[in-house]
Amino acid sequence: MMNINWFQGKNVLVIGLAKSGMAAAKLLNKLGAAVTVNDAKDLQGTPEEQELGENGIKLISGSHPLSLLDESVDYVVKNPGIRYDTPLLEKALALEIPIVTEIELADFVAKGDILAITGSNGKTTTTTLIYDMLKKSEVPAHIAGNIGKVACTVAQNVEKEDVMVTEVSSFQLKGTKHFHPRTAILLNIFDAHLDYHGGREDYEHSKGKIFANMGPDDYAVYNADNRAAANLAEKSKAKLVPFSVSRAISNGAYVKNETFYFQNEEVLPLAEAVLPGKHNQENMLAAIAAAMLHGASLSAVREVLRNFKGIEHRLQYVGEVYGRKVYNDSKATNILSTQKAIEAFKDPVVLIAGGLNRGNGFEDLVPSLKTVKAAVFYGQTKDKLKKAAIEAGVKDVSTVETLDEAVGEAYSFSDEKDILLLSPACASWDQFKTFEERGNQFIHAVGKLK
Image (cartoon, one colour):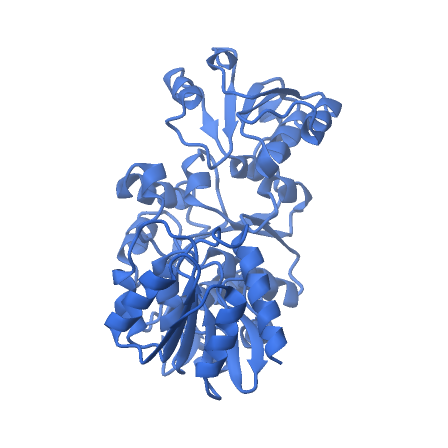
């Protein structure tokens, strides 16, 4: 917790409303700042305008006028998704006005510890695992971040003995100056969001800011098998807590003899953990380390690992249908995500994929498709995916128009102990409004098989 009087009497411009902008504006107003909100979308006559007005907060919408900025503005708080090359932000940078994101505000008001999780993949799963482990251990915990709960809102309820488990993105971390978690986790770094960051160097630098303000009483939990993540963590001043699926590390979490360990204590055999795949082994190791550092009991950790249902639409275990295990990975909107999903299983996979045609081919998916038993493709990309599957030598390949048809066709190719996997490798917008709607439709279609 920092000095909450910091914003008293300051002039703050909040750029971009949405959930995080609304939360930031209301908190800043509560902290005594003079707040103006600006959004490119015209919000006149909306409930948002009314709510801001009722709180005495000025709203200017419909564009980003440069006249909003002059030397009288002390701080800019921006929506994480707004790029820094937006003219209004470029002017703020030229005027040397500090630009931050709302997780910075969370750090100002949270009285207890912040446990922050970032990485290119696995953030939501790891965040939820840790939260469940702490709650099961009766450690007072809160969950926040990109999982739907705005950090600066949750932080206002975090008391001295509490832990705030917070998922943070590179977009959010780039806009931090004082953010100081008690424990920071860096799961991995792969090429992602390079258009936003302008290249790999800025992306890595932004991820590394999670460690920037840590000291010798803090913990840096990091993936020792991911060189980029390890390089960033090892530069921090925090106590290093590595994790690895490939080698034993006595001061960290690791896999040895098909068993999870933490600091040389046996935790659980891999076979008893419900989440499939090497990438989930990494997520579970990070969660074990962070949760136990914050007081989680071994029995609670084991119980969560055995019974965790996964995150909705992210390799979510749906259940069994006549001996086939069914997984909903509708969130897999790109090739890399589908590759990881296929590789997560040792049992034969019958794959369902397809969706919006963005103009790309699926050559990069061919090596993973070589391990697939059968595949059914639907939607705009069905023919492109079929071409890749034939190249991979998949024996049974079929194309249909809709997801409902694909579920029935996939079942016809399957046998007991097979995996029925929806992992589309495409966006959902050819037939669905969101990947959530697509995942729910898949679950409904699976239910009809029963």
